[in-house]
Image 1 (spheres, helix red, strand yellow):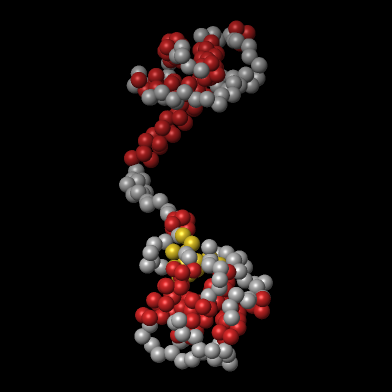
Image 2 (cartoon, one colour; image 1 turned 180 degrees about the horizontal axis):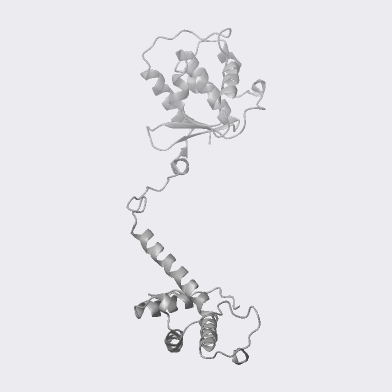
Length: 277
């Protein structure tokens, strides 16, 4: 049997069997009343019109023509020794009954397809908005902040606060303690805003200590600080794991800051010399 990887699809039929069904339907006759002589001649006439198709595809149509001629030969002679001799398996369809069965099967699937096509299709008229990678867009517009800009934001944040704060002393909170807290709290890839981090602090001095601790982590390339527009949210993202970070190695601040009260004016002096880039 000829194997075909290419199929010809015309307006009214698909493949050689579809062509046969089309010719029968055009004559408006029942498949069971098929005139093998007439349909064979019509089929061969139609093949003459298919001159520009691919050779492999044409072979499929010629294969069906051979089957029709074989079936026709069986109808015009009654003597066994006058039948055309073929090897078993050369032709898939060798009798009129087999041909009718194939045509009826194809017709059934055609009608089923037409029925399915008329049924309402789910979400046919619904257009879904494509998913947007907001994180990728956000990362593409965020730009590193300079130390001066970051410090100005911090001072402005403190000035907007209305609450009264107490003095921070060593026995209450230290920068290294705050670093330890941030180490346990922040995860690699986590992104949050500076405002969210500072708003969770209980008093003014804790806000300042948190700010200095974040600057120290930025100096050590543990996190990045970004902003997408002037006066917009400032984002803090951990870029290197803090699991192995030893807070005792942090030395980007003056240890004396942990013993004295910290004021707005001390913020600039307490910050690391290297700005986060």
